[in-house]
Image 1: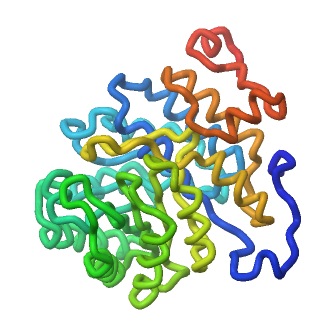
Image 2: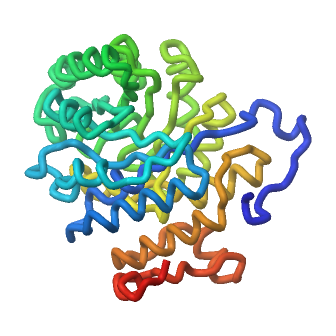
Length: 332
């Protein structure tokens, strides 16, 4: 697997890098949540199923938030009821409060995620409450989930910068991360929500984080606003991080963070990882085809450079079902 992008490297060349990386595909949730046109439920379900067939182990499916805030995710229960749930694939969902958790539980979710901010102002804009209040809101969610054997992942946003406050000191990130760990989150995903992080600021944060969060409980989530995401991911790998969030086709953008562009493209991340000799379990050609399909379906340019290059060079063929008309014609 990997479309020929993988090149075996010597142990010395790969010293300090993980042997394998788990990709957390956030396209169906983080990637689509900001789309203005409501995407049909069956397309979301098809999207999730296609992603699961590429070898991805984790596909974030949807968000159990109020449709008043994020209308695109209003069909969360229908999506969870219709997906195929492939063996060995986890389908986490976002749950901002107990009502969301109860909905997720009723829909058969086996993993949920809670999300806090390292920025006080962003927390008030995004969650309509202070950081402390948001953590208090998540505590019963974590408690209920763990009691039912449901895994909980924690997100921390604005770890390298905030659209309102600018630079965020690492101690604020550490405080929120430690609180989420204490609630029982098995993993903390550090989100550069507006994509302002650099290799230097990423390294500085991860060095501080290591004092509080074990590296095997740390994940990274970069937006590519300034084109720094892959460099930042490489720095994270050098610090021992082996879980990376990304979105196929570079879909995404936070609806509460003006100017934030999409997530780093999963295709680009996998291409880089395979080039480093790092295992992902992902079929890159198949992944590129999915990115091509969903980008054309929603009428957005494919933001994956690796994906575009592979399609242009003929190393990967465009997916035949690029649009609703093709699907209706029975093209798989």
